[in-house]
Structure formats: structure tokens, C-alpha cells
Amino acid sequence: MKEIDARQRACPTPVIMTKETIEAEAPEAIRVRVDNEAASQNVSRFFKSRAYEAKVETAADGFEVIGTRGDTESRPDSQAGAAGSEKKIMVMITTDRMGSGDDTLGAKLMRNFVHTLGEMGPDLWRLVLVNSGVRLAVEGADVLPDLRDLESEGLQILVCGTCLDHYGLLDQKRVGDTTNMLDIVTAMQLSDQVINI
Image 1 (cartoon, rainbow, N blue to C red):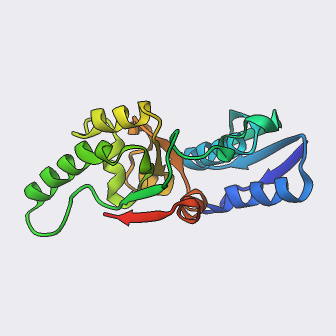
Image 2 (image 1 turned 120 degrees about the horizontal axis):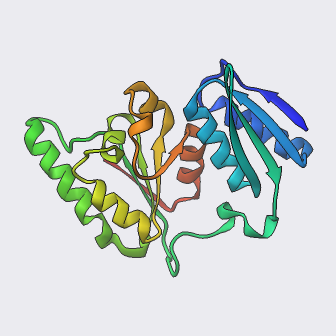
């Protein structure tokens, strides 16, 4: 089994190390050692995007993520956006408030914005939450039901793991996939349009 020690490495380095190993060697199985939960989730999700089955085990000094090669025909990253979509729009939300000025008004505008996102239809391809925008995906957030509805309709929601960790919210996330900067940059490259909020 190929071994990667990605402890003490900042996001997205553990994922990049895993990606480079898969591309260079294509091993049947890889064990990646990481020292935080966000990294374990990111590496696990990356394994799944590359048709590896992922298993996370707790270790004395963090986590071990074990990837075992699976069926390449079912790679999730090979699928297009929502069914029938002609255009792929990525919306990146960088704050839990919309605009500047009054915070109460900003929170209300963000609630209305997220509630209305579904009106974009199948063109809405990815929703990315970074910085304080990750607060929208945690327990108690006003927009959590709206985000769950969007996710259940097939929208992939990416939630920055580094940001969740920074705000101490990693264990409170209730919707979306914990992600890293490599995934976010890749989504930007694949999208036809990026809308920043």
C-alpha cells in the first residue's frame, strides 16, 4: 500500500499530494496520514472523485484515510452538471451577510438570496461557501432548509474546510461537502460563469 504522510500540511496540500501520487503511480491502495478532520474529509472526498473507495480511521496522531481503487466507469467528477443543463454557473458566497452597512438588513438579504437561488434552474451547477459564508451551512442557520432542498435536487454544495476549522464549526456543518481550495479552483475552471457574493 502506498503511504503518504501529509501531517502538518496546510490545506489543500494533503489533497495535492494525493492527486500527484494517483496521477504518477495509480496505486491500487493509498494510505494518507493527516492531522485534522477537515483534511481527512477533503482527502476522502478526493478519493471518491477519482473512483477510489475511501475509509477514514482514527489514529493516535490524527487520521488515516485509506483509498482503494474502485470502478472507473462511475467517477463522479466525469458527470456534467445538473441533468439537461446547457450552462454551468458557480455561485461563490464569501459572507453570511449581503452587502455592507446594516448587518440585520444584510442577513435578511442573504436569506432572501439563498431562498431564491433555485430560480436559476439547472444552470446553477455549484454553490461554494467560503470565509464567513460557511456559517450558512451549520446547525441553526436560517437558510439551512433552503440549502438542504437545493442539495436534494442535485446541486453540489462545497463548504470550505479551512474556513469551518477557523471558525470552530467543522462539527456543526449540516449540509454540503467539506472541501478545499483545489476543489474550488477546479470548479471555477470547469464552470462557464462564476458569480461572487
